[in-house]
Image (tube, rainbow, N blue to C red; front, top):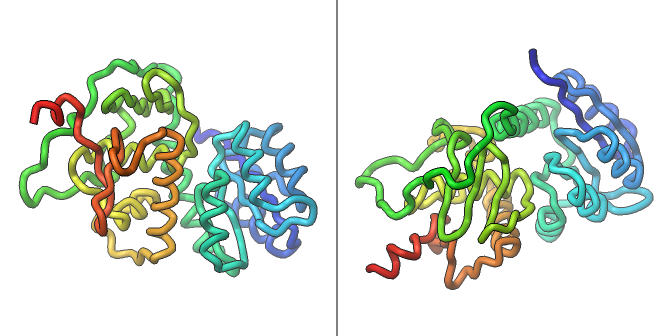
Length: 275
């Protein structure tokens, strides 16, 4: 039996709030809605939602502050809704803890598709109750280049079944946690997925386009449109990850930028020293 899905809608426009409630209810969510940011924070604390839709322009406190406070106590997937198109809003939203952005006006079909992709990703990363992971489990090899012409790993790969390790960093998908030198690092669901994809890929470059599609739960070779804004959001998420991990982009231990292409896992230190 499918577990109950819970969503919190924080939206001051009554018509849009009604649309969000209707679409999410039809998608199987128990929906709690409010027009106020402070009330939204309390609803999240009380109901432990899987999903939060969050308007930027609220009458009491702005959406950026709401997202920041929610992130202190929840790993819910936060989708910010805004009528603004300025890139700075996207950057600020992602830096304060949002996972995704949806620009108004949007269609119910677009919202439903986005939400279903989010829930598939959360379901795959859910902590299993009867199969505790071993943080010391063998890490996926990250120092071998794939044979020429071999495609990058796609979302069909069982990324949630192993612990991945690199240079003192451990990403444990079963326990849904990240540790750097034994210290647990708090990240958003989107940041977790991006780091997981890069570590699974090893030295294979993951393009920004492929990472966007990974977040959408699409095949790597899907023909769907990926905008510059989508790719920019990946850049911001990677920047947030590096900041949280204290990973120097110029001398990376974990996430290496391939300029103009994308990202890959850094070389293991022992391999680099032996070169």
